[in-house]
Image 1 (cartoon, helix red, strand yellow):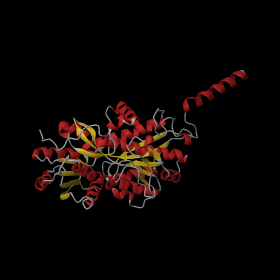
Image 2 (tube, helix red, strand yellow):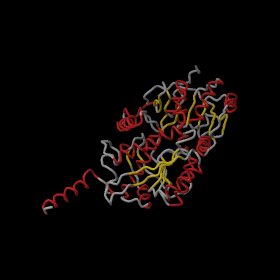
Image 3 (cartoon, one colour):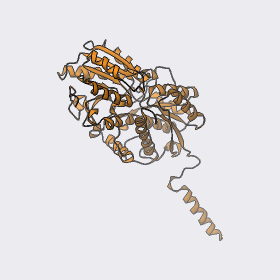
Image 4 (cartoon, one colour):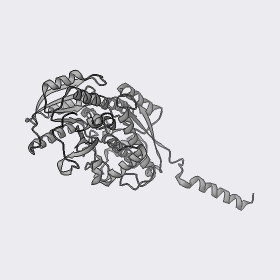
Length: 419
């Protein structure tokens, strides 16, 4: 081959190898472990939540005209355009499985960080493993208050704690009474008995002293995964509360609703702690019987009317997975976006660098899809810039009904009778 032709061939090969952003030796993948329930009672919600993580990774790895961190570039710019790889495990709702998953992700898969785990009880055990190995752990949806009270160095939470969220119930009910929309005096609490449900009940009970106009008339715990809630509903019938606060995963939320209808239990209001009562599985399983439940939420598709990025991300989610995004997937999406932004700012996958970047996180309202002023962590790893909203299932869709000033639908109160 003539010399000049050889040079041309070499130049062409070089151009081909460097075209299209092909990963180089300086841009390896950044592995993120995701620990979620893909089987068991919360499998459907787990799948929806993991899909939100997949969408977040797609946005970071690709190029999208969105005002989100890393959306308009490809990969992680400060790591040479490295692409993110998500490794998902199924903890089955079992804390010991989640701990084993975390161990494997860290020691075998060599992940840079972990996100999870929907169940607070699983977040507790799996984050304990991450803490032992010194690997950053971010949760966007596990709410038990004590998760950020353990003095952990590597644990961060973008979603509000149970204690913060419980106050929203009381603010909402007090507002209803003040405006003459309701006459609520008595409240009952029913909750599953893992860490998440116990923490919600514990947090809510602390607020009765601050809101003396309300009286607690029943506090009922049941075993997570139970197949019969008849006796618990009979206790509610006896207590006759004006309002019931719930902390139930979707399987028991469906069972409890069927039992309410069967036994004719219909208080003025049914307030729920996100999770089961606002999941797509709940609405699909119960159709019109899913209506009128109120959920303390963090996110609503209705917010897209005033914040276009919410509508844009929801549209992408719907295109990819043929369904609308719900609140829990939206929170998980936010959690992993915060983590990836921190990894990029760290410019490294070294754990201490990522941890430091997380502590310095200061995202503004226009950089996230949540209706929050922003995201900034305190010394315990808790986001201090979150706030809640109340949505109500109406015509099998969650509609934003409170704060009243920003509502997209009028609150239906009291609950209509079962049909």
